[in-house]
Length: 131
Length: 388
Image: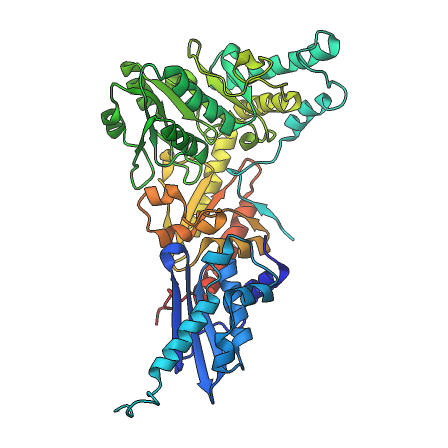
């Protein structure tokens, strides 16, 4: 059912864990649906210096989480935002059709983490943020 | 690598005695049972021997046994065939919310055709309440269908009590006994059923064969039309090797019943105790005598079932889960949800079903292996907080 690349990422997932002083955190999914994914990012000079994940879910959910952390690490924010669900699935040599929607959440979680990072940034166009 | 098969409610290994009973009918004795010459008569003889073996296993007479392609077809004939035969009398069917899809989907089909169906709720342990069933009966009720043993959580239903009510009210009563055979006593008279479905491959027989018990004087409409085989109720040239195997499987099952039930019960309780030692776990379904002797179903909080199944498979252990990921649907097990389990707990369920071939050593290997797998997935889970 799963490609060797999915099984490899599922059985030996990369970048599992939390980043305690993360610059952005994104959570998507719902345990009621069987998938919940949190992505942590550390940003330096507009680049994703570190990306980690924690995931509750099936083999595909864990494999896509592992894959996106590897794809996103080292990329600029703009480059990372361009990663789509399909890119993640292709990089994993495909996902079963029924998993394309429910468990392929990693790209969304990364976007949510980047959104969170941007929200935390002081607004550069407006007045300086008060501390 | 060690391989431990604990998914016997999905399917089971064909018994050597059963295989021996089947083999002659593939090459040497390949005749069509409807043919008049010797080769055909040998096949006919084999079918009638099997019919007797199946009938004996459930306390029926051979004329009351119809061979089918499996449990699903037997359920379809019993339910649709009864609905069509009884629609002048009424249009209401009572079933439970924890039936196998072969029953549930057949009832949903009949709803589309204008029948009304009551899906009874169950207790948290997955057992139909007889008083609720009695209260659901109306003047329009023409069929009650409730499974004898649930396939996911092994809960044993009060079939004999329901049978008494059905008889009193003159309502036809069907039970799917596919998971009951070889686990609990199945006797059509003790249970008071008019129709009963059986499957070959759950009792160490072959796949692709089943049977429907049809009490004498219980008319059903046929669904598969053709040459009039099986008293016109199920046309199509008989699956002779399969039928011979199913007959033998019933005979072996009945002969070794006491010994195998004692063995399976011992292994079930050993496995259950071991698996429930893992923290944040819960047993799904009842304990003790109300549970099938071969079924263990446990939920682990904070982890998802498919992931556990995949990691267990890597360790050579073959089991199933009630998680949505085990099916093409997006929802977890309807049985666990009907028992009131929250969806996230249902996603984290594992079903392990042993057989007469299971060993204590295999059970102990599972008990040793699973804690590491659950711990590993919990480390990865955003829902889990390790105790400080």
